[in-house]
Amino acid sequence: MSDAKFELFYWPGLPGRGEFVRLVLEEAGADWVDVGLLPESQGGGARAIMDMLGKGAVPAYAPPVLKVGDLVIAQAPNICSYLGERFGLVPPDEAARLHARQFQLTVADVVLEAHDTHHPIAVMKTYEEQKEPAKARAQVFRAERIPKYLGYFERVLKANTRGGGRYLLGGDFTYPELALFQLVEGLLYAFPNAMRSIAPQVPGVMALRQRIAERPRIAAYKASQRAQPFNPKGIFRHYAELDEPNAMK
Image 1 (cartoon, rainbow, N blue to C red):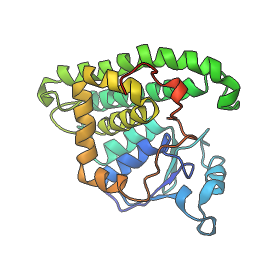
Image 2 (spheres, helix red, strand yellow):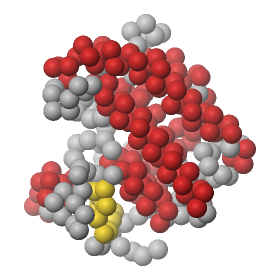
Image 3 (cartoon, rainbow, N blue to C red):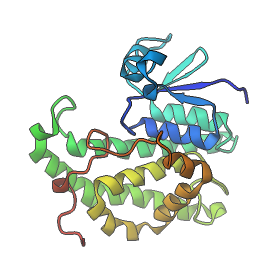
Image 4 (spheres, rainbow, N blue to C red):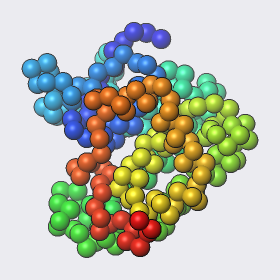
């Protein structure tokens, strides 16, 4: 592995899709910098993120963007698979790599649906402009989509006999488990009441989330000031009216 520096470009103040990349960089022990958290005087901040979108032979549509030397790549699942494979966080055979990407992309699907609970009509409209459609979208997401997605990962864990119900793929940790961890964290923040009902249905997923939280590098990162907390401006947002109103408190 070379000692090249990895530069991550993502909006400061938001975990967002950038957090999925940050977790892989942290778990890998990579030499990396979160450009958005740097002051503008050092070439960082939101201005640097905007400037990066127009750079590279193949410009990125939106952050997160990863710059490694002359290589510039975008899309969180794409970046995570690149890093996971480069740092050996997935077995080297083709099937394992493809299945790891499959899991990472499935998490990305859920993240998009979570975002659409508070912005079901248009990204450029405020939440307040679409509150009623948001309530309807959130109700379906809570009742049908969260259980279906987390239930899928529960089945994957049980079907992976080599992992003894502890791992998504093979007999050891792989990078998409970081994505599943962050997904569950986001759902717990955004829909705490609903998750109280759903969590007992997916004990393997919840146990995996706890194991990832206890991994030394992840625990150290999450305890640091570099880890940006969930907030009302991110992908995962907690609005009481969108959570399960009848769940046990």
